[in-house]
Image (cartoon, rainbow, N blue to C red; front, side):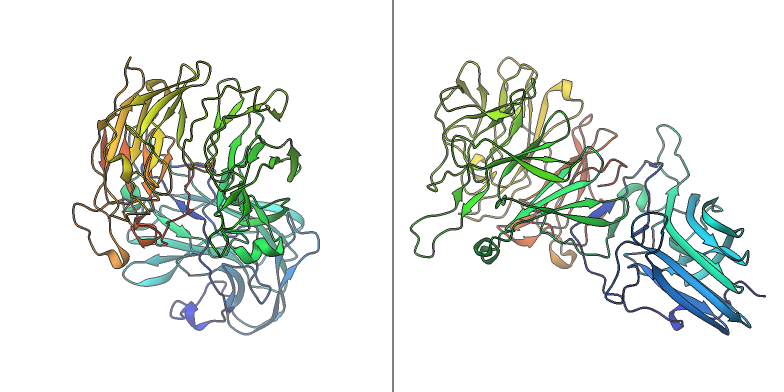
Length: 574
C-alpha cells in the first residue's frame, strides 16, 4: 500500500478541524547563536490543550484515500496527563490516516536550514503499518512533503520512538510532522517532542537564516486563564502568574481573585485558589524557591474621588510543591505597588507603595526569613522616607541598596532621582547623573552580568502625567566606585510603531522589559511610546562587554505595554 501522501494533493484540501488560535501572553524567542538541547519546540506537545471540538489545539485529522476510520481523544491510560490521540482504521483500500500538526504559523515549529532535529513520540500500535511523516514549508513553494522518518513496530505498551531528521533543506522555515497509520489497526500517540540536535561550535552562531541573528517569536495558540499581572519563574521551571482581580473592579467587587501556574513544557495551566486581591502586590523568591507575596489591592479608587487605590497589609507565601498560598503575619503598613528586595542573608526589605488610606507608605518593612515573619514597626530600622511606587532597588555587593531611579506613575523622587540606601546605618546618599530623572517612569533597570562588576543599566522611560514621547536614554553606573555616578549609555535603537512605521530619532519606549540571557547579553523588548498607548515593536540586544546595542532583533507580533513582562525560561527561551 502507498503509505505516502499523493504529491499533488494539497493538505489544505483535506479534512481540517476548526481551530480558534488565540494569542496568549506567552511567547518564546529562540536566542540567536545558541542551540539549547532539550528545548521542546512544539506547541501543545502533550495534547492537553483542546479546542471547542475537544481535539488538541495545533493538531488536525489528516490523510487521503479510501478507508473506514475514526479519530478520538482518549482519556484512558494516556502516557502522561489526561489526553492521548487515538486513530483507528477498520477498513482500508488506499491511502492513510494521520494525526498531524497544523500547518499554522503559530503551531508549526520554526527550523533552521542545515540543522538536524531529534523528533520523538510515545505510541501504542496494534499494527506495524505506521510511519513518522514530515512535511516542510518551502518559502517559494509552500507546504510540501519532505520525508518518512521511521517505521514504528507494533507495541501493546507505551513505547518511545526517537529519530533524527536529515539536514533541513535550504529555503525551509517551518516543518510539521506526525504518525501515519496505513493499515488496519489502532494507533495511540502522546507526548511529542522536537529539539534542535545541531550544536554550534564554541564561539560560532547557527548556520543560516534570520533566526540565527534576529531570533524568532512563536505566538502560542492558546489563551491564558488569567491576566499575568505578576509573573515568577519557579524552581521547577513552571511560571507563577498572579492576577488577583486583574485590574477589573467588577472582579474585585465579586471577590473573584485568580492565580495560575503555567507549564511551558506542555502548554498547560493549573488554577490556584487565591486568598486575596494580590493585584499590584510585591513579590520575591525566597532561598528555598517559595515565593513571598506582600500587599496588594484593598480597594479601587472611589467614584467620588474620596480615595484612590488602597494597599493591603496581607502577606502570603506560595509553595510550588503544594501549589498553595499560606498566610504569614501582616505587614506593618498597607502596600500597593511596593518594592521587594532579597538581602544577602535571605531577608527581604519592602519599600514604597500606597497604604491603607491611599497615601504613600513611608515605613521600611522587613521580613525575617529565619522566623518567617514581618518585623514590627519598631523592630526594623526606619528612615520614614517615601520611595515612590515600585521603586527599583538593586542589592550591592556590600549589602547596601541602590535605588536606580526606575519607578512608576509620574515624576521621580525629589533631588537627583537616584540614591544609595544603607539599611544598617539608616542613611540615604544621593547619586547624580541620571538623565531626565522625571521622565524615567516605567523605565527598566538591570544589574549587568557579571554581577561582580557591579554595573547597572537603566533603559528608557516616560511620564504618565505629562505624557511626553518616551525616551531612548540609557544610563550606566559602576557601583564599585567610591562615589558612584551615572554616565550616559548608548541610545536605544529607534523603535517601530504599529504597522512597522519607523520612528524619529527622538522616540523610544516606556514599559520596556529587559532579560538577562545565558550568554551574558541583555535582550530588551516590548514597550510603548506613550502611557498605555502606541506600542513600540522594536527589540534589541545589549552587550555589556562592548556597551553597544545590536538592533533589529525579531519583533514581537503582540503589543506589550502596561503590566507586560518578559523572562528567561530554564531551557533558554524567553
